[in-house]
Length: 369
Length: 243
Image (tube, chains in turn blue, orange):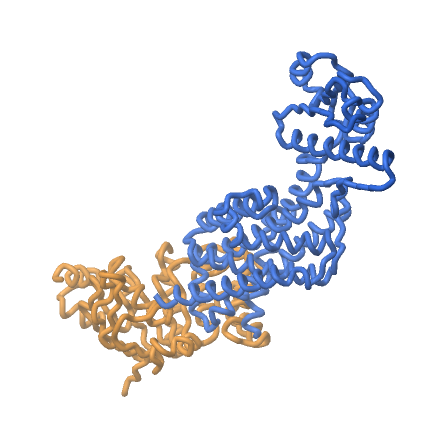
C-alpha cells in the first residue's frame, strides 16, 4: 500500500508543477462554456418580420398582432407585392414574411381552408426552421382560440410547450454536452500523455522493473486524474448554475456517482490509448481525433441521433458520451432518478469494465514480449 | 574459495519474429563480481538484460536470477534487483529528495529508512545542498551518479546497468566507475552492459557479444593474453572480426 501511495504522491507532484497544463485544464472548460453560452447563442429573439396582407380583415389583423407581440419577432413594416420580398431579404433586416391570401377571413368564416404562407430567408436554415415552427405554433393557438369562442362543445388546446426547456435555452443543451466532451477529453488525453511521456523518458522502464504490479501502476496513474477530472466537472456544473441558471433537478449524489463512473471510463480509455501509442504526439492525436470529433458529432450533443443514417446511429451507440448525455439530461433537467437511467448506467459500467480489463491486459502483455 | 553463482543462464534464446536477438547464450555470474556485457549496438545486450530483469520473457532456455526462474518468478526477482537504464531514469520535475522518496517508497522502505539512507547517500556523494533542487537543474554528471545510487538504494543483491555512462564525459565516467566498485565491495553483484571498451578493463569478467552470440568470455587480463592484444579495444576488434 505504501508503495502505491509513493506513486500517487509523485503523480500529484507532476501535475501541480506543470502550471501550464493545469491552466489549460481548468481554463478550457471555462472558456468553452462562456463561448458556447454567449457567442454560439441559438436562442431566438428579435427576428425581423414583414406582413403582406391581401385580405385586410379582422382575422389577419389579429393573427399578425399575435405573432408580432409574441416577443420573438420584430415588426419591420407591411409590404404590398411579392416582388418586394427578395429586396427585403437581401437587406438582411427581414428574415420572414407573412403572406395572407385574399379573402382569408371569408374562407375562415365559411369553414373553408384559409391559406397563410410563411416565407423565410433560408440562408440560415436553422433560423428559418425555427421561425416556421414558432409561427405555426402561434397560428395553431389562434385556431383553437377560435374554436373555443365559436362552440363551447370542443375545447382543443394545441398550444405547443417545450417541456424541460420552455425557452429552448441553449445552455440546457450545451452544458451537459460540454461536460461529456471535456471530461472525456481531459481524462483520456492527460492519462495517455502522462503514460507515454514516461515511456519516452524511460522512467516507465524503471517503474516496470520495480516490484509494483501492473494494476498498481495503472491505478497510481489514474487516481490523481480522477480527482482532477472530478474538480473539473464541479467547475462546469457551478458555471452552468451560476452563469446560465442550469439547475440540477435530480439527486446530486446520483449525478456525482454517474460523473465518477464516466470519468473512470474515460481514464481507462486513456490508459488503453497509451498502451498503443508510442509517443506523446500519437497519444494526443488519437485522443483528439478518435474521441473528440465523434463526441461532438455523434453523441447527440449537437446533432440529434434520430436524424442520423442507421450506420451512424449504430456507431453512436458505442460512444460512451452518448449514454452519459442521456443520463446527464435526465438527472439535471428532468429530475429523474436511478430508476429511469439504470439502463444507460449499466451500459457505461459495462464499457468501463471492458476498457479497464483491456487496458490492464494490454499493459501486462507489453511486459511479457 | 568456492564462488557462488547468482545468475545462471543456459541456452537462452530470444526471437522477435524471424530475428534472433539472443542465440543460445550460456553464462554464469558470480556473487559480488562486476560482470561486463560488451557488444556493438544491436548485438543483443539490452535484450538479454531485459530478460534477466523480468521485463521480457525468453523464447527458450533456462534463466535463474538469485536462484529464481525468470520465466515463472519475475515478481520475486524484481524485489531483489536494482536497475538503471540507458535513458535517463529520474523525474526532472521532481527534486532530488522526492526522487529518492519515490524509489524508496516503491521498494517498500519505511519513511524512517528513506530519510536516514538518503542523508547517507547525499553525504557520500557530497551533494547535501542539492537535496531540494529539481533534477532538471542538476548537472548531468551528478544525475547519473544519483541515478546509480538510487538504483542500489534498497540494497539489492544484484544491480543491472544498461549502458549507464552513455553521453557522459570521461572524468564523470571514471567517478561513476568508482561508485560501481564501492557497490561491488559492499557485496552487490554488478551486471553492466557497455560499448566503451576502456570500461571493460574495470570489470572482473567480461562477455563479448556479437550477432546475438557469445564470442568470448573471461577475465580482461586473460582475454588480452589469449588474443595477444594490448587493450580490450583490440581484443574486441579481433573477436568481432573473426566472427
